[in-house]
Length: 140
Image 1 (cartoon, rainbow, N blue to C red):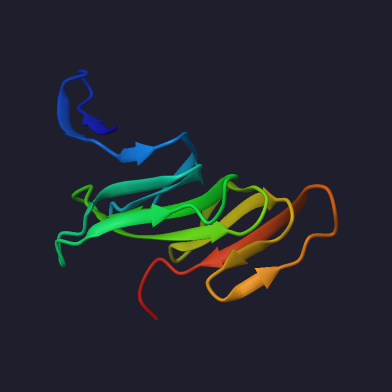
Image 2: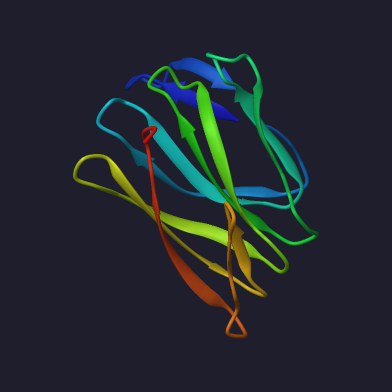
C-alpha cells in the first residue's frame, strides 16, 4: 500500500500496489519538485497504479523465478509516472538511492548471475556482485 499522512497521523491518501508474490521497498528518495522514487525488488509482477497522463498501468513483470530490482517514480500528487526493472537470471535488488544536486539520481544494488538494465547486460564475476546506476529523473 502507498499511503500519505499529515503530521497528526490522519490518512490523506491510500493507494494499493497490486502484486502477486513477494515484494520489498528498500529505499525511498525525494526530489525538489515533490516527486518521490522508491526502489526494491519483486518476485513476480506488480502494478504500481495508473499513469495520470496516459491512464495506463505502471507495472512490471519479473524476468525469472528469482528477484528483480525496480526503481519507480511518483509525481508530486503521488501518481506513478514510470518504472524500470533490473532483471535477468538469478537475483537482482536495488538497495539504495541517493539524490545528487540537480535532482540527479544514483541507485545501488546487487545481483547474482548477471543483471540487465534497459538493453545493457552486466556479467557476473561469480557470487554476489554490485552495481551503481545513474538514472535520469526527467526526460532527456
